[in-house]
Length: 207
Image (cartoon, rainbow, N blue to C red):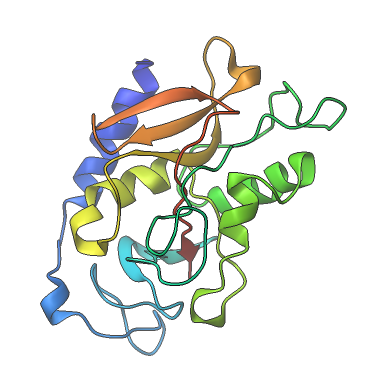
């Protein structure tokens, strides 16, 4: 595992471990008139799993849907299973290419835009962006640090399977042109996966 990923795991674990909330005391919040706590229901109908502590350029809070109802890949509540990152078709801008994605919190939305622009809507990023929880149209595929923060609050959010989930961050190591980063919810690790592999998707939203 690259050294920077070990630093990410340590830093995000420390941040995400502060103020764990119980779903039993959850309330609905908007982050403006009503401040949010971890475990509250956000304006998009998701569960708040990250609080930056103050307003950032991208917002302050991150929310993710719990057990998803409705029609998506893998059936109700299956987290849009079996989605590629994607490999892209030969001739598309993202085919076997290193896309300029980032890993930090606050980068997921722009990463998602970049992936869709390069590879189209039939990708993990496109599936995440198509989610309309709470009537909001600004959901996205989380960056590495965003998904790692969600991983540490997985019991608060709920509805997450014990499988690998895609981030919107392309791999930075060897073979990075054909790999992207995913997090194994089984082995508790951040790993590089081939872009054409099927991993699960869980959209998130910043506000």
